[in-house]
Image 1: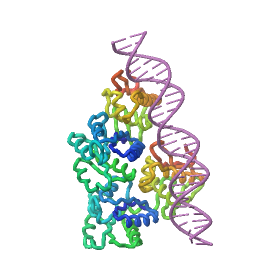
Image 2: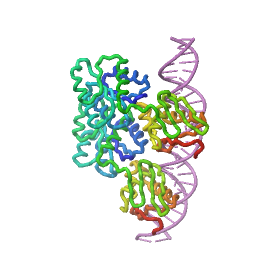
Image 3: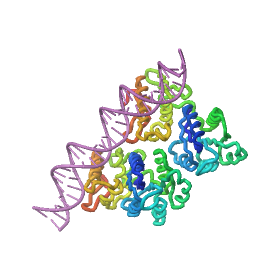
Image 4: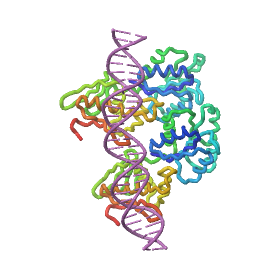
Length: 236
Length: 236
DNA sequence: GTCACGATGAAAAACAGGTGAAATCGCCTG
DNA sequence: CAGGCGATTTCACCTGTTTTTCATCGTGAC
């Protein structure tokens, strides 16, 4: 449910408010005040953004222009344009440029959230309600991870970040996932580069499973990353 | 009895008056001055609106067009169109578009209220007179919550918001309800995002039950929301 | 053996939600 | 129209949980 969001908006105050509100919803938000910079972030695929919220008027590169570039490059993510009320007449241009929705300023934060949810739902890639790999089953609705063991079904409630992490693993099982990739996708940039958030969070997840008598399905591949393997209890 | 209402009207003055009058009746009203935005709000399902009052002539998207979209999307809620006297001739178009009723401006507020009441009554989803889950029984008519305990029947009068809250819980028992959802459904947008109205109101409800010697059926699921469970007095 | 990277446990920080008191609101009455 | 009253919201503070940081340790590669 939480999204990886890019916010391109040059009004500091508004941007801060928006970022805060979105983060409070559990989303991971990067903010940048410049159109060109925003475009760089989007196209670099440093993180796989799932939504971009872009102001109409921006230094560097205008919002509609940013949309157009995204579309011609084949980037497939919902785009939400922010326009000042006065620019309402131009909205057609924005939609032409490839925006999926627009919102005219000023707006109530709740309204922004409503749009975000609507776009999220509208996308064809609307996320499957339940993720399952081997004996592991995570239901984002209840936040419960269910593991079927020899002894029966164990249900473990996961906290926010634990859920995001587990979701990522379940979506990419077997594959070796570099720690840096986890950090880019699950945390915002502006991270202290020497932070070991990822390791710490992985540990919390492992420990929580262990506390329920389960072996860890997450293995560390030294210097390459992590790997999720649905191991049965009692294997090497 | 109170409704969740969306008002789409671009004349500031009229909109304000209507909003005030409706709120005075206990309804929860969101206002938005633009047709397209109104449509977004409706379709985003931020809140489950139970009535939309829509002006005929609007920037962004006309009233009838908004109705048509609502109908083709399968949204099932009463729609009340406001038309200037001159447009009266077109009323057929409005009804064709799926409006349930229309009202020509200028109108007396009393008349608006009458229409609202009428639409409310006419809807097939006209609310059940009594809500009951387990030992809890709420009668919206009298505003009394009746709880059957070992010691007999306890009747507790609930205040306005308490009633709405209890109704929502009784309509959605067991399920985990995010606090944000309660706020969107029971309060209007334009809320201070950091307000803790919901927590406060939940507390009042819990406390009122406690004052009558009842255990709280409302449990908090940390960081996910609230859950109504019809627990019997004397359980974990 | 040394280096780099990740693991680890404890502590700190950030955060969500609970709480009582006080302020505010809307309505009713005198 | 003032005062009172109950309902509702706000405020400041408190609590328990989640997340991050910090310092340190272990391990494999070279």
